[in-house]
Amino acid sequence: MEIIKRPRRLRANSLVRKLVRETKLQIEDLVYPLFVVEGENIKREIPSLPENYHLSIDRLIEEVKEIKELGIKYVILFGIPNQKDEKGKEAYSYQGIVQKAIREIKKNFKDIYVITDICMCQYTSHGHCGIICEDGYVDNDKTLEYLGKIAVSHAYSGADMVAPSDMMDGRIAYIRNILDSEGYTHIPIMSYSAKYASAFYGPFRDAAHSAPQYGDRSSYQMDPANINEALREAKLDIEEGADIIMIKPALSYLDVIRRIKDNINAPIAAYNVSGEYSMIKLAISNGLLSEKAIMESVLSIKRAGADIIITYFAKDIAKMIKEECK
Ligand code: PBG
Image 1 (tube, helix red, strand yellow):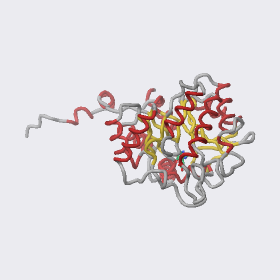
Image 2 (image 1 turned 90 degrees about the vertical axis):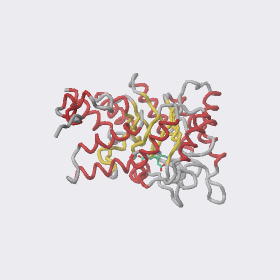
Image 3 (image 1 turned 90 degrees about the horizontal axis):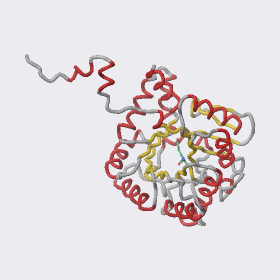
Image 4 (image 1 turned 120 degrees about the vertical axis):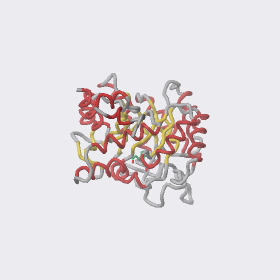
């Protein structure tokens, strides 16, 4: 039997496999999420999110130093305030936890790029991502004013990029406009454009104390069954002035990432969310999976079309990439 085409020729050894490898993860592709709390000398592991911590600002600086040594240059900050109220005022206070953290990181590091999440759910007593009207519904247009204030307070404190994750209509145009009128024309917006009402945010809500106190987020986050709607959302956000389009979660939505990548001419980000992370971490620590599952799952997000990946695995991946280079 004469076989002319033999695909195995290009799999024969690791050198040739590397030569023909189509997708390569780089440390520069990764954004690492960090959780900041009020107080001093706090580094508390988050039970639902193994190897991730609640950090007070002093310990946050230590953590940033550590990730910088691994080559990670991009972080996204989440704040856990001491006080919550109906209107989430700690979210836009200039003395808020995230605002203080940005200033401190910027003071200590020249070459760390700080992205901030623009949302209200960690700051409101009811845990919803906006202002509630009398009937319990999240009031879209009223919420925009608050999102605008949050964005400006982050930019003022030194954030390099803002990432609205609330899913209100018209928020990108509103935030772009207010940033520009306050003199922050240079600050890019990474929009959580296709953010689904997902069960995979569970560990994050535990970490950020941001679970809704009643109801769920289905009146603003997207239905997991929809993909055409994701493309509509992404197109709207581009028209409104978004610089980067994000899809979230990532692993259950690889088709959405690919569809948006093929149809939208902008950098595409994907959020490899807390549930996706903890599931694999727990399977590894219980001996069900090998560590290789980490690279394989994050690589799949890049292969699907993501240029930027926000992931709790960033440190693991950075170590693996370093190891490979040796
Ligand atoms: C805030 C926000 C959430 C996440 C990122 N920003 C939670 C939510 O929408 O409930 C989830 C991230 C993760 O699960 O890792 N709205």
